[in-house]
Image 1 (tube, rainbow, N blue to C red):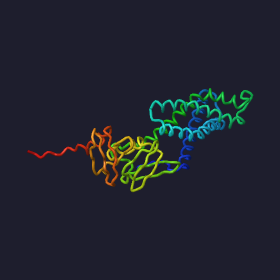
Image 2: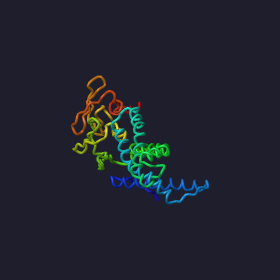
Image 3: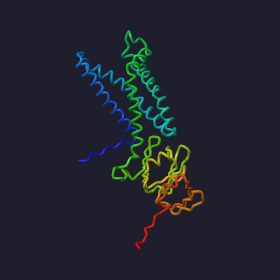
Image 4: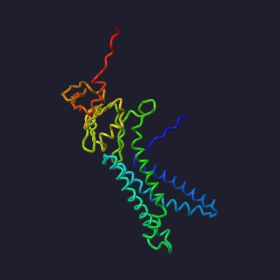
Length: 277
């Protein structure tokens, strides 16, 4: 029996998945704390233990979407790798402080005491007690987000594509474009224009990111502003200095830069089979 896992395709589905994940983490963390305390001879009541851990992770459930959104923005907007790392480092303390401040704001009436007289005092205590845990959780959310954005780019070990469509998510909507309908894709700043089946669609993803998700055997980058489907090429006309004009079956003419010339090496320099002597 083969079990196929399907990821959600709507915001409601993703929200449900995220809440289920945090609920699972909550029970696992509460169970660990409960059994460790019992093993050390300081048994705790299960209800308060679960309630406190649930309070902590409920704030993380609220922060998950902003953190995921920030990570996606960083990946889309910041091109240099060192710039992305710097952005994640800056986002780290912001996320941790947001967590402890929200916890103090929401749960201070529940957990206040003589020692915790104000919401600020609770935030200070939570910051010290949960700094390492919050750091690991932040790293985990970011890592899972990056892994998810790169997952469609992976191919099966046998070299075949896992899907015959290009999936794009924009403003909570999922669009699927069959790969065999795409003629070429052009850059439009931080966006990309997909030309497929006589239609042009503007999507919130860079040309570089799309190129990494598309199968290299079928698509090729020919210019910093253009990516084509290889089997749509009708003619390649050299224009000097290694550059060329690429004419597609649909009549479009695009420029092939010498920087990307090797991507069309099979078409530019086909090796004929020599007849046997």
